[in-house]
Image (tube, one colour):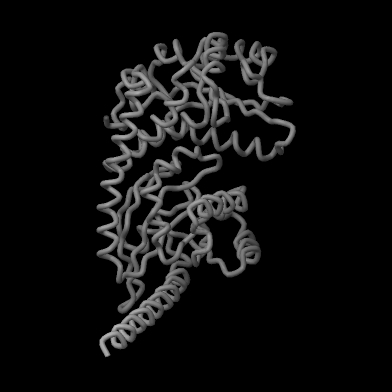
Length: 390
């Protein structure tokens, strides 16, 4: 089944209300930042954020998440403002909670994961990414089948409903598990083909471009490779791993791969489903970590990416830290402050080309080091072969 096909007519400009939940051990600023990011996610999915709120709770209410007192206020706001969708800034919402909330609020209720899955379904272009998205959707759905009941039959169009569609959602657990197994088999075949392609590039120096989503990875690769990859000012503009040849000068060439952008609280099943694509990072000789220098949370963005690199076993790879989008910086002192805070990093703009020559020089050093290592390895193999022959 093609996950990119919307078997339910999508609703455009869906009016949404966002709810963040702050527990005692959570920082108010972190909760607010996460809710702001959720707002950007909903916008990317095609919705309109009417308003949002943060509810303080000592614990998540087992029945309604935020308790009936808050729900009464929310219900009144929904009725007065024609809200069609309530989005909780939570990755996991139990089916019973969804059922209770929808019955009380008289509108659809979803969580952060459904929004991200919806965006992925819209963005999937290649056969591989479509399989990966559908696999993630089904893995998310499978443990939630029991208890969803009536909620499944009431799905209309809109954010969080794209992908497998009504017919798939109403099938039984065994059918979905068979579908998951089939999709996994397809990904294994694609992975084998990717390995063959990778072997053909064994003599090449390879780098992976990683970063927080919308940091400008594709724009940077476009500039370096003089290519025309899809670029859009939206989260997760591209889901596929694209590899391009970049000529640093007359004698040096490197293969750079653009990868899926990371985000805070990215659902684990998405990381697992995109494992074959993320293998490109594992097989790279070095990493270019692109960061939006204008982000209000540079440290958090870097930590998020490094956390995912650690989970992939790639945190120890040689890394170039490149702060992008200096062309949009209002205060020039900010650039100097970031450069001092992250010593050894590079700043510039993939849009204007500022700072790119210095970045290419840094890449060239990695290319020279890797070539030297490969030559030493080949010399050792040749010497061992010679000893064996003698």
